[in-house]
Amino acid sequence: MPPHQLPVSSNDFFQTLVENAAEGMLTIDENSDIVYANPAIEDILGYTPDELIGSSKMKIIPERLEPVHAAALKSYVETGNRNINWNGMELPALHKDGHEVPTLISLREHKHDDKQYFTGIIRDISERREREKQLQKQRDRLNEFADILAHDIRNPLSVAQGYTKIAQQEQNMPELEKVSNSLSRIDELIDDILILSKEGQFIGETELVNINNSVRESWNRVETHQATLQIEGDLGDIEADESRFCQILENLIRNAIEHAGKDVTVRIGKISNKDGIYISDDGSGISDSGLSKIFEHGYSTNQKGTGYGLSIVNQIVEGHGWDISVTESNEGGARFEILF
Image 1 (cartoon, rainbow, N blue to C red):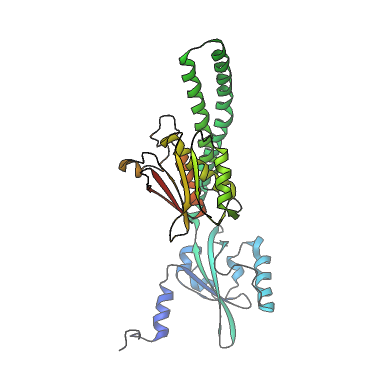
Image 2 (image 1 turned 180 degrees about the vertical axis):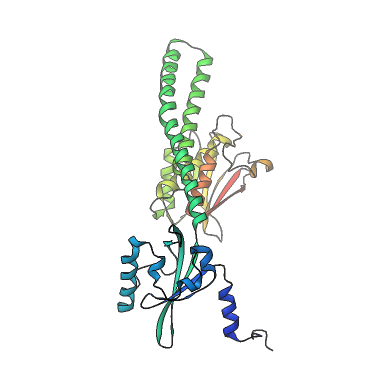
């Protein structure tokens, strides 16, 4: 017997598969009458197959959606135009006890004895919806925390910075410089935490962005001191959220200056034989222990750093669907590689 040949009749084999499928299966004719339901339907909607077969599909459709379902099927039968996504649409179904069940339905059309039928593969997504609700609650709490940072902490912080400047004008005390630096660091921390909590991986509308122009714009937005920028040739274009792409570049440039020194040379070029760019410096590099933690929230080898800059970079990169890694540059410093 050839390896692909079934040991039993095809009809028996496939009938067994359908009857034991974990997903619910429901078949209706062009009049919306249910002609088949598999046993898994009972786990999802509470009805046994016998309770459904022979009845209208409206039996499992919430009343408010009945006109929509009826019109959609009628329109397709008459015109052949699909006005819904057959490969997976989220719709509520009516359980036998009256409550609504969130489901994901995929549709297929087929003919038998010259009659038209539609089979839906039905999955219960109640657990997924519940997880989404919990995640939304967490995001809401995080946004609330961010609002507190932006308002309730920044106000007294601004007052403290103002009085510190007045004190520095009247008193030449090194301690006041330390106070001012600490207040500035708090301000930077608030900025970074707001970005992480409010924006995170969110990517807005994308467009074709010229990388060379973005590099130059980002360089001009950073306090570069005596640092030098070298752009290695034409870096091409990339489909990206331009504002957030520049944020990646700004944070990586700022990271190089903070860790490699104010006279660092930053090189940005294309990665050979790959679709991506590198941002490297000629500083002292990153220790082996630091490589594994470099993108973690709050990790920094610079006492003046917030430890959030590279974490923000990582989130924006992931939000675009890209990859980022870090290694040693040819000059012994750090080299960040972003693959598009």
